Image (cartoon, rainbow, N blue to C red):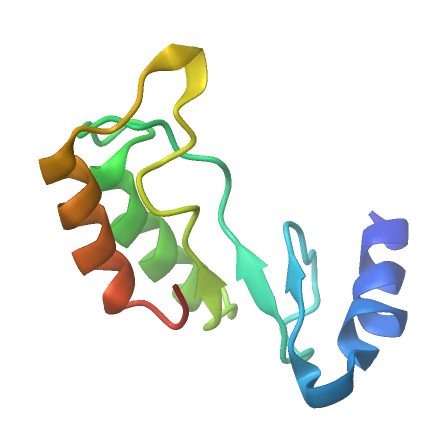
Length: 101
């Protein structure tokens, strides 16, 4: 939308040091901001869990958003489903290879 485009260009893109995170950035590839991928569930699956992070970040890069910020480490624990220790460790390892943690 035009509102999103203007907000990213005129507000988020003006942060001191150029460090800013947005959840949407329609047609704002020319603004050096971090685009956060959507919320992830605390699961192993590829639909919206750990296995969905790498394809989503790669797709963001192909679309012109190279600074894709993965979701919170371990997922969001929606529906009372918290990550076990192994999932949390693996999630941390994946995020360590991303532009930001």
